[in-house]
Length: 254
Ligand SMILES: Nc1ncnc2c1ncn2[C@@H]1O[C@H](COP(=O)(O)OP(=O)(O)OP(=O)(O)O)[C@@H](O)[C@H]1O
Image 1 (spheres, rainbow, N blue to C red):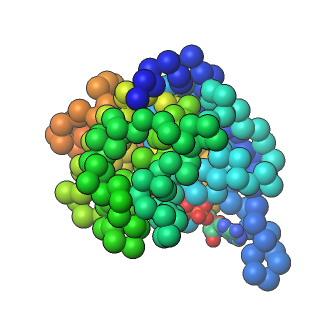
Image 2 (tube, rainbow, N blue to C red):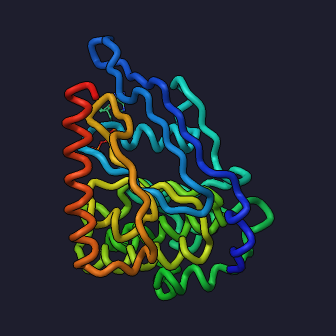
């Protein structure tokens, strides 16, 4: 995998969502996002953190271009090669692990060398297996491999490690750090888990309750992926304070 050439020279991600609503079952509009403005430098890893149901997946789908029904603008980084990992791995059950990964490749690239990607993700001995035979951890790994196989210059991940055993999640986080550091892909990662966000990200974006907007953001000092548990705990305490102050200010209308 010779990826170093892409993403570094890409544009930043600029995501402005002035308004996004859904219609509820009884036909009344529910405003999910209002006045969200996010900028992420090319090659950075941003984490979007917010309360349950605040609109994180909605924001990611808009960033991916999957939901055009909103008011605002999205300027995606790079030339538009997008990799996306959903909460559920969404693999084709009748295809092997290798076929699932290769299916993501553009026409003419089906024979691409995936050796290094497969090695980093520890999938070498599982390539001939079918999704139904995989643990959740291996299925998530396959989904991550598929997202990286296209050599994306923009990567979106929606809570890819939720409901995994902590040992498996820790290993997958390390693998994600290795891959994103190596490829310098501009990444937006959604999570509920503040410690996970601090471990992985260069920049944190905290969302309000619905309608979601950014109430606080912070750049973290390097090196990402290598922060000790003490450093993570101390940054987390600082961030909780920052968010509770920002929330109180917002309630007072400051
Ligand atoms: N297609 C839809 N139609 C109607 N309402 C929707 C639709 N998609 C999402 N919603 C509503 O929009 C709100 C935000 O949903 P979203 O899934 O974006 O939140 P989230 O922060 O990702 O949630 P979670 O933390 O549970 O993953 C929720 O109230 C949800 O019910």
